[in-house]
Image (cartoon, rainbow, N blue to C red; front, side, top):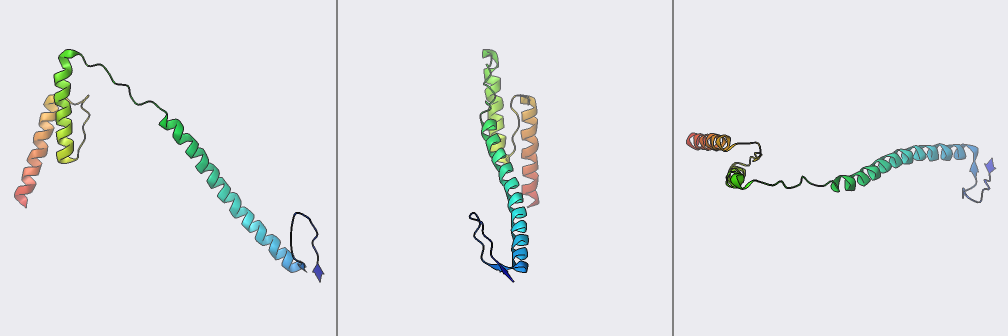
Length: 119
């Protein structure tokens, strides 16, 4: 037996009770999938809103270097740059001493030389 569904908000064709039940079940399934998708999209939107807040964080401010330490800091920066360009390794120039930089560079050069000899 066909049943007409009359609701101005929903446009459904006339169908049998079984077809209507099947359609209802399909719509429920789709609704569950849409609810899951909505959760994912809301989480993504929340993360996107959080990113600008993180981007607004100010970077570490520059610090003043006393005149008597400028040349030492400049030399440490040279070692940092040299090691980075030649060996792809980055060291913190603020916490690594010149003595340590010299040792690190010597070790890297020694390893490089040994690997060349093996080839």
